[in-house]
Length: 345
Image: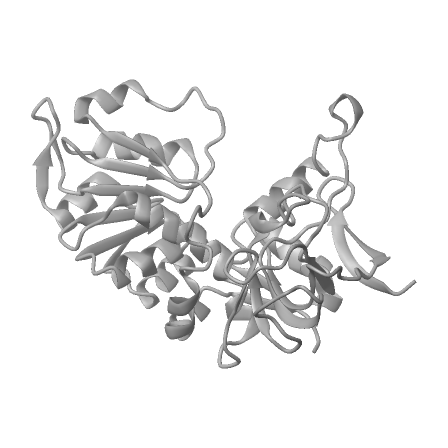
């Protein structure tokens, strides 16, 4: 049996690097040698849980990790069209028949090799040029999440937007908003280094929400307006929650003018601290954004075109031989912006 190294959830807050059987592609499959894979907040969530509650009685079950892979095709089945050995590809984690790759499915992208089941170009994978480094290509999946959020916002060039949370999704949304031609984009966060990155990728202004009055600052930046009761509010049109904490929701409610929109892309935990009733004062529209129904490969050409801009989102590139350190960085609040694990060619 030919084996490969693969990362799975271990004990709570720990990973296991295991020897697994290297997949053999069937006639409709392709085999990809992984060259880079990003670590996402979803990965750390599974690690905090110690797996997924799929076992008997809801017991925790270990699962393979990694849903942000990029790699090189090494073998294709006889019925696969449009792919050949040597092609560099990014993967649609939601395109696997056996379940979402790295998110509860049977396969994980944080492995030396990944089987692409029923490989179809444009559905399960797409090819990118060799001018793009693998670590940047591994941003394709999170940038599709960010792009869907911006699409859901329906932001127009004249809109004034604030993005809460300068992690990869918030920064990705900032890039997409500016490429979309949005006039003024503000990013709010509590970590100065992340705010500096926000300015580097095109934000027009930033707010340190730990030290500044967000409503007052937004009013200064976006002008004065009022809510449905005539109370003074900021002139911000769209609020994007890429942080997922009650303070963001409540700050939006306190700041929102009549007819403003809140797009929620971060996962909000259940909380009694959220002021849902306050939405009435502004007739605030709440829009949820989940995944990337169409955006997974729509983003790839622009990721290629603007690769140097997107590369700024990567704070740490860690070799697979130190994958444990990579997950420790990702699980330590404030220690890293975006961690990408790289594999030797």
